Image (cartoon, rainbow, N blue to C red; front, side, top):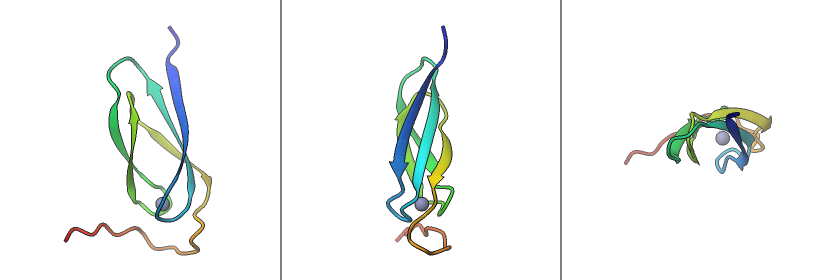
Length: 73
Ligand SMILES: [Zn+2]
């Protein structure tokens, strides 16, 4: 059986970059996998079975170069 590929387009809500997330749907259960936006490092999550790979389709649109800062408190 050929492995199925999940391919979804997602926008980063912090920097506005358009990302493409691909993941192999190799059996197993779907669960939320975290991935970091390559443009600003903000962590998002995608529901899939395999480990997600992230590609930038369109670069960030906020005109900044800083990274997303997690606010922990
Ligand atoms: Zn981002």
